[in-house]
Length: 119
Image (cartoon, rainbow, N blue to C red; front, side, top):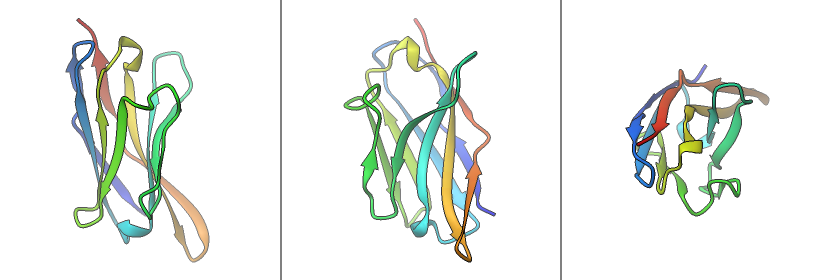
């Protein structure tokens, strides 16, 4: 089982920036597809960004151009750089890992970190 620990959340003013980190342990990080999801109060959890083992990234239009996902395989860490933050970005952000154990697809979630965008 992969363990994920997020850090970097907090309170930021509109237009500000924040970087989230997620440290993984428990398997060969290089083979994981890593992602960030968020969930605002009263809303469903939604995908924010995903990065493949080869480094290909995909982000929805709602954050494209403002958010960047990256990974450091040497540190087993995935990052979410968030710029030009808006109040509607306020949510709990969760790190996600998708991986395989003997051809069975598995997934793990972090505990979540709160991001609040407010003046």
